Amino acid sequence: MNKISNLFTRHFRNFHFIFIILTIVVLFAGEKMINPFLNQAVATVFYSPFSKMKNSFLELKSVSEDNALLSQALIDVSMKISFYEEASLENERLRTILGFHPPQNYTLEPAKVISISGEYTPITATINKGSNDSIWIDQPVINQQGLVGRVSSVSPDFSVVQLLTDPSNRVAARVVASREMGIVKYNTNSGMYLDNFPIQGDIAVNDKIISSGLGGVYPAGLTVGTVTEVIKEELEPFYKVKILPASNFYSLEEIFILREIIIE
Amino acid sequence: MTKYIPYLLYLWLIAMHQVFLADVTSIFGAKINLAVLIVLLIAMYKKEVTATWFGLLVGLIGFAGITEISAWQTLAMALIGLIAFHLKEKMNLDSLFARVSLIFGGVLVHNIILLLLEVNDNLFGSIIQYAITGAVYTTIIGTIFFLIKDGIFTFEKTKTIF
Image 1 (cartoon, rainbow over the protein chains, first blue to last red):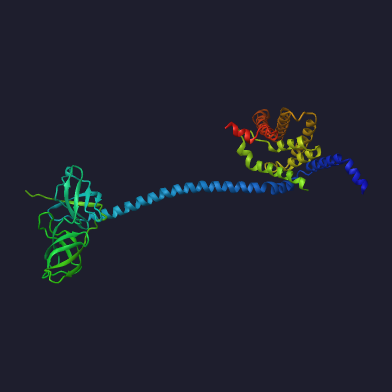
Image 2 (tube, rainbow over the protein chains, first blue to last red):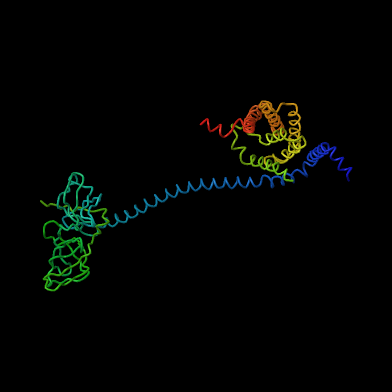
C-alpha cells in the first residue's frame, strides 16, 4: 500500500496528466454517447439556475413593459368611455329637446350655459348668446323641464340669466287645478314657495304651478314647479306653500330663450 | 475539500457570465472571454497541474451553455492552462506588461481556436472583428484586475480624482 502511495507521490504530475489525457480521449471517443449526457448534466448544475434567473428577469421586464402599455391603453379607454358617456347623455338631452315646443307666439333660441354663479344655490347663469343673436333683457328663459329665469343683462356675445332661485326674482303664477294665483319667490333658507296664496284658495300637495302671464315678463303656461307642502299657520291670512322647482338649477346645460314673434 | 470551493465558484462565475453578462457587456460584437481570463490567472498564480485541470474543466463546463461540449474546446483550454503556466515560468511576473501580454496572447489564441471550430467562411474578417477586439477587451479587464491586485488602482485613489 505504501509502495503505491510513494509511487503516486513521486509521479504525482504524471498521473494527473495521464488522467487529463484519458479524459480528453474519452471525450473525443464518446462524442455521440457521453457528450450529450455530460452536456445535460453540466447545463443543469451550472447553467440552469442562471438561465432561470435570466428568463424570470426577462419575463419581469416584459410584464413591466406590458403593464406600462396596458396602463396607457386603460387611460385611453377611460377617456373614450368618459367621452362616449358624455355624448350619450347629451344625445339623450337633445332627443328630449327635439320634441319640445315653445309657447304660442314664441320661438326658441337655444343656448348653452357656460358658467353658473351663486354662493350656496345658483343665482345667475351666463349663456353663450348675446345681443348679436338678438337676445334682449327680460326675455324669459326655459329648458325642457320648465321655467328657468329671465335675461338680466346682455353683452354682444354673452348674456346673464337671473334664475328663479335668485331671491329678488318674482314670477306671477297660478295653480293649474284651481286657477288661483300667487307669486312664486325663492328664499335661500326655505327654498321656492308660493306667496300671497289666500287660505280661502284651493291648493293641495302635488298641484302643478305654472306662470300666469301677468307681470309682462313670463308668458302664461310655463311650468314653475309642483306643490310639496301646504302649511296653514294660525292667524295668518295666507297659506305657506312650498314648491319643488320643475328645473334643476344645479345641472343647467342647454337652455332656450323665448323670443316673442311680433305680429305687425 | 474546501480548497476546491473557489474553483467551483469560478466555474459558476463563468457560467453566470456566459448567461447574463457576455451579451450585456459586449461592445460592437467584442466580448469579454472570462473563461480564458480565469484559466490564465490560475496558470499565473497556481500550480501546473491545477492550471491544466482547471483549463480542462472550463473547456468542459464553460461553453456547455452556449454550444455542445466539444472535446476540442476541452483540449484547447487544458493546453492553454498548461502552456500559460510554462510561459509564466520564463517570464518576469512582476512586470505588468508581461502579465498583460500573456493575457492578450492567451485570449487571442483561444478566440482564434473558437473561430476555427465554429466559423466556416470569412475567417480572416471574423478574426479581426471578433478575436482581436475580444482579446483587447479582455486584456483591458485583465489589466484593471492586475492594477487592483498590485494596489496601483485603489478606491481611495479613485476618490481623489473626483
